[in-house]
Length: 50
Image (cartoon, rainbow, N blue to C red):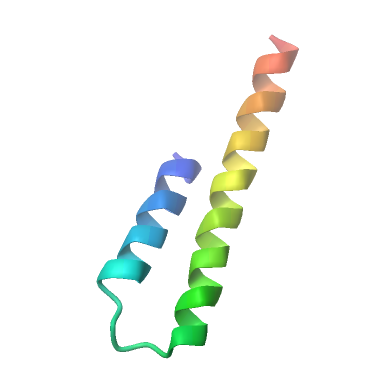
C-alpha cells in the first residue's frame, strides 16, 4: 500500500502540480521515491523471514 501511494504521489506531483516551484516538485518526487524504496525494502525483509 505504501509503495502504491508513493508511485501515485510521484505521478500527481509530476503531472498535476504545475503551480509549485520546480525545486518543490523535486523534493516531493524524492519523498515519493523514498516511500517506494521503504515499501520494497520492507516487503523484501518480510519475504525473507517467511
